[in-house]
Image (cartoon, rainbow, N blue to C red; front, side, top):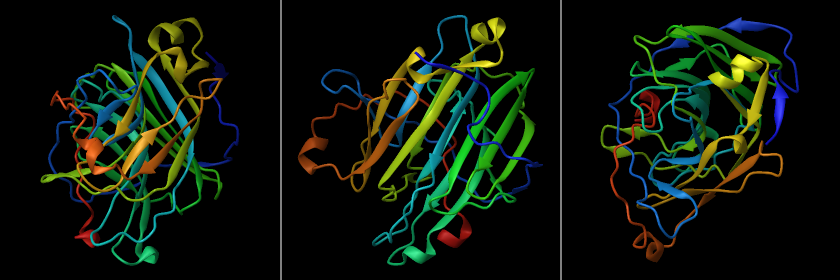
Amino acid sequence: MNTAQRCWAVSIAVAGMLHFVHPAFGAPLPLQTESGGIAENLSSTNWAGYAAVAPANDHFTYVQAVWTVPTISASSPAFSFSSTWVGLDGFGSSTVEQIGTEADGAPGDSAAAQYYAWIELFPANPLVISNLTIHPGDTVGASVEYTGGNSFFFYMANFSTNIAVQGTLNTPSSVQRHSAEWIEEAPSSNSGVLPLADFQSVTFSQAYAQLASQAAVDPSTIYSVDTFNSLPLDLVPLSGFGARTGPLSSDGTTFTVDATIPEPASLGTLALAGIPLILRRARTPRATHR
């Protein structure tokens, strides 16, 4: 276990308010998880990373991480997609409060890849953060904080451009705050999980969270991923790129997710139970991707 004070290693002088644009999105898609047994990591069709589950009668109040936006190579023959994010809820609950970056590939043209930041309060539609420019190779930090009632405070800093945005959004009803997540995702459309982009590798660092019981003792102290009941997840698709989650660092704050191509024979060994866990809002590509 490792603790830290709630601040970023690199400070941003001025943080603007969140500005949004509204792309088109699809309907929620249930996630399948492995029924347990031979694999150390749980298997998912759309998530890789860590999900921390709150103890009974407790709730998460805060989550954060830092990562470098991956560079996406040309995808062939179709478009491909990848989302990197942190959030609260979603692992076994029907709401998600999350913020992250997108890195999407275009067929045969790496120069046409698209990068942007987004925010989401499921079941409301996701929103693109229009006043925070994201480039491949940028280092970003993001956090979600529960501030009481139905309110959540979102923050994202682009440390490479020294620009940050922040703002408070409200959910339409109360949420469980049952889990905290640090995730690399293959987003989904109404037809299912979209092809995962070859993001190569993403390392999450300064990965911390906080429970309500911990905040009651000291609201400024946050705790490393290994403090909690944190479950590692591998993204195992039916075809194409997947993602493998590595172990936590010795201080419990850093881990890497690597893109992988599963061997066809290995797919048959996975026993997918079909447990319906709504992990986040299913998303379709923006109009320029269709």
